[in-house]
Image (cartoon, rainbow, N blue to C red; front, side, top):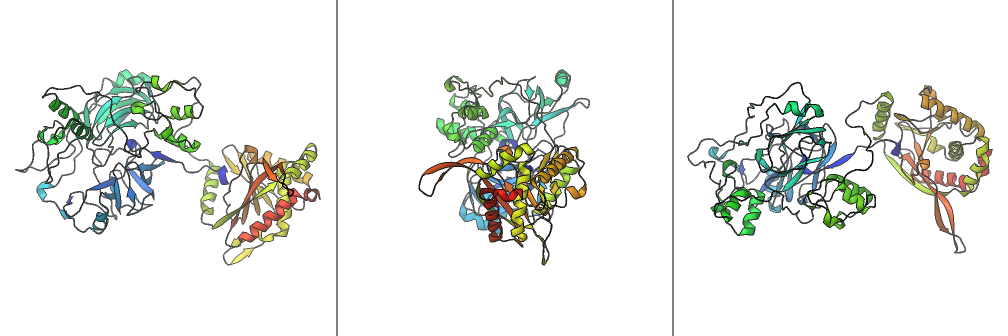
Length: 631
C-alpha cells in the first residue's frame, strides 16, 4: 500500500546496450505504419534518420513502446531519451544518437513491434516534418539503387550443445551502423563477467562506446581481436556459465568474420567493394573516426581508397595516406570526446548521481576515456576513500572491493498467491480518481500519553486507530464507499492497518475501533499481527476494513502518499515525527516534534473540504485532546 509496494523500475538504457541482431533487418509489423528507407530525399531539405526498436537483452525479439518522451515536432539532441521500451527483462529509456526533430511516430504507445523495426523518424531540418509525416516530396529510388534485405549468414561454426554459453554479438550503436571495430577489450579470457559489466569498447560510424553485457559467467573466448572489425550481429566473444568450461569451449569455432550485411543487385554502375561509394552529392562513406582524422589532418576523403565493406573508408586508410601509403598502428585507445551537453558517465554513475542529486559535470572521471564511473560518484559523496585522480590510469575499469559483496538475487521470480493478490488489487485501484491532502501535526502531547500507557501494553498502532476512528465519527463521509450512483455509508468503523510480512503485505482489521478501549485495541492488534506473520488470518480479519492506515514512520519515512485499496473511500499515510523549529505567538522560537499525515480519498464522493476537515479533527485529538482516546 503506497510506498510499501515495489514500483516498476525504469533503468536508463545507454544506447550501447541497444543492439540489433543481424537477421532482424527492419522487419515490418502488420497493422502499423511503415517507413520505406529506400525513398530518395531529394525533395527534402535535410537528411532523415530512423529510430529502430532496440534489443535490450540477448533474448529479446520484440519490444513494446511504453511511452514516447518526445512528441512530433520536438527537437532532439544527441543523447536525449526519446522513448521508454518494455522488453522481456525491464523497462528502459532509449537514447538517440541523432540530432534533429521528431517527424513521425510509426509505433504508438502500447504497441509492440519486432527488434529492428522502425518506430519513428527524425529529420535534420524542421521544415521537413510535415513532408515526412504526410509522405509528401518522397519518391522511390530506381530498382538499381534499391538495397536488398540481408539474408541470414550461413554459419559454418561448430557450436557445442553440452556447454551453457552465450555469445556477445557486435551491437548496432546507431541506426546506420552495419559493422563495428573492437577498439579494446575490458576483460581478459578467464575473467569473471557480471550483468552490467562493460566488456569491450566498440568503434562505430559515430562514436566509440563501451558495451555492457546482460549475461553472467566467465569470458571464455575472444573471437574478434582488438583492432578487427565485424558485422553487426556477428559473434565477438563467448561467455560460459561455468569456469570449468572455458577450456572445453575453446575447442569449438564461432563466426566473427566481416561479411557485407547488405548486397547490391548487379548493375553496370554498381561500385566495386574497393571503391568508395559516392552519392549524387559526392559524399564518401567513411567511419566517424575516419572523418574526424581526415579533418584534423587536412586530408580530402575523396582521395582515400577505403578498405572497409563496400569500399568504406576507415581510420587506418586515412593514416596510410598521411604516412605516404605506409600502415600506421593507430593508438587503440579512442580519442572520442563527448558532444556538447552529453555527460560522459556510465549508466550506474548516472543513476547514483541522480538519486543523490550530484552534478556529474563536477566529477573527474577515472574510467575509460575519462568516463565518470559509479566509484567516482561514491568518492564525491565520501562513500569511498579519495584517490589521486591524476595517478589513476584511464585504462582502469574498476576499483578493487575490500568488502564481502552479497550474492544478490537476479532475474524473474514467480510471485506467490499473496503477491499476485496485492498486485491485482493495486492495478484495480488505479482506475479510481483520487486526491491527497497533507497536514503537519504536533506530537508532543501524543508522545507523552504513549510513554505513560506503554507499560500497560498500549501500542502506537492502537492509539492511531482510536484517534482515526473518533475523527471518523464526526466525518462519516470519509468512512463511506462509492457505488455507481450511490454513496455507501458504513455504521461500523473498522480500521484496517497495513502490516508488512515476509513476501507480501496484508491489512488486518480492528473492528468497531471507535467503541473499543485502548487496552482492548492493543491486545487485539498484537493478536492480529501474530496471525498475519503466521499467515493464519481469517478472511473477515483482513477484508472487512472501512478505513485504512499505512504507517511508515517507524522506518524513518518523513511523509508519503498511499495508494487507495479497492473498495475503500480513504487511506491515511502516517510519516515519522521529526524535531521542528516553530515560532510562538510572542515571536520567540522553540522546537516541537511534528509528523506529516497524508490522506488519499476517492474523489467521486469525497471532496477536498471533507478530507481537510477530517485531518483538522484528527490533529486536534492528537495535539489538544489526547485524553479522549482513553474514553
